[in-house]
Length: 173
Image (cartoon, rainbow, N blue to C red; front, top):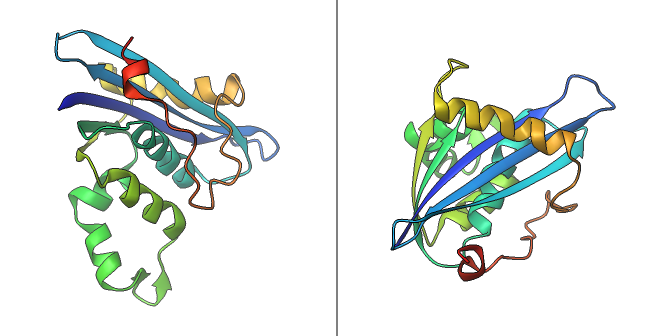
């Protein structure tokens, strides 16, 4: 089983007319110990930071065609705590309600759960902007995505439509 590290970030820029973006870097260690990386990112307009954070994880996982052991590094408590603190289990048990309020972004949570199915996924929170290498890597991703335009075009990401999968064998060449 390949070992995959997924570095993610999402950002909605403060300018309401400006792009937000998500970024993800897949870092795969093959059986020979070689590390291969692929960047997946997209600029997008007028959405929320939480949706960008979810999309960053989703696109990374959806591009893996074989089961992998995946470690997701994210600076989003919204993403990491949903799994580490079992929020997502409670939401599912309560039929996607949080008290009387519905859980936001259910479409993307369901898409993320589907993308996770074949993999063993561990979520790690990158705490704060403290110069930690994983933090620096995550922090640069969304800015790169927003500044460099639409690398991936997943226009209907509010629907559960997967982008074209990239074969992991091609990725490892």
